[in-house]
Amino acid sequence: MWFIAICIPAILLAITLQDIRSRLVYAFWFPLLIIFFIVNHVRVNQGFAEIARSVIANLCFLSSQLLLLKVYFSVRWSVQIDLTDGLIGWGDILFLMSIAFYFSILNFVLFYLTSLIVVLFSWLSWQLLTNGRNKQIPLAGLQAFLFAGVFIMDWYDQSIDLTRDSWLLEHLAIWI
Image (tube, rainbow, N blue to C red):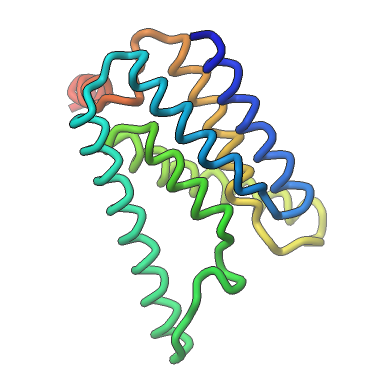
């Protein structure tokens, strides 16, 4: 299954380069990622019920986040807001939906929050260095870049399993 270990980071790199260069990502990357993620779950012998539970919970979490954003901006600007009309791109949403098929529930929330913080600080730093030439954040591209590193780490480090919450809970138990 080394094919997966090569294809997923390659797709993530393609998403990164496309989003950084043009703020657009080809839509066909996302179904490919989902297929490879499902094959990876089969590789690590996860049952359909476990995969489905994680995917549904992750997509519900993501949907609630998008709904909260929509309500926030609609109330703030006193007008019904379409998030995909200049606030967040479809590529960003599709990327987050795609990675929902890889992560377990806690790992998805952890990656989602951490990657948003890292991307925000990285982008603000980049804006300061370049005098803010481009205001649009390549969110999907930068998150894809971060996820490529996380995926490679997960693939090669047997003590980490981002498809199950147990490894994270064990590490958190050590700190508590």
